[in-house]
Image (cartoon, rainbow, N blue to C red):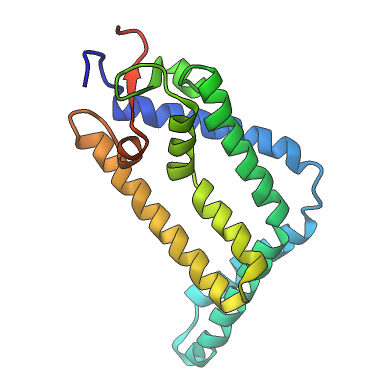
Length: 205
C-alpha cells in the first residue's frame, strides 16, 4: 500500500452509523406511502409469540412445537407483506453506497464528515465497479436480493431455511470484516480485499 494514512476502525464505524441514520430517514419518507397497519400487526404477533416461547413453563412445554411453527408462519407472512419495502430499501442502499459514493469520489456523507474516503488499491479514485462490489458484498444487497427472489420461487419451509442461513452467513461475514479492519495493519476488511479497495484519511496526501 501507499503512504496515505488508513482510516481507523472508529472512524469507519461512526461514518457508517451516520450513513445508516440517513438511509433510515430516506426510507421512512418512502414508507409514509405504505399501508403499514398489517406489518405492524404481524410484528406485534411475532413479539408476543417470542415472549410466549421465552416464558413458557415446564408444564406447557408440549406446546413449544406449536409456538415455534406459529412463529415461522408469522415471520414468513411478514416477509411476504414486506416485499415492496425490502425492494425499496435495496434500491436506496444501492443508490447511496454505490451511485452517490462513486459520484462523490469515494465518500458518503458519513465518510465526508469523518474525513475519510474509499480509494482503490493504488490509492486513486475508486471505479464504479469497485463501489458496486463493496455495496453488493457488505451492505446486504446480495442477501436481500436473494431473499426477494426466494419469496417468489420457494415454498415456505425452504424459503425460511434459506432466509435464516443467508442472514447467519451475512452476520458472520460482517463480524469477520469488522475484526479484520480492527486488527489488520492495512485496515482492510474482507470486503475491501474482494473489491480491491481501502479506506484512507481524506486530509493526508
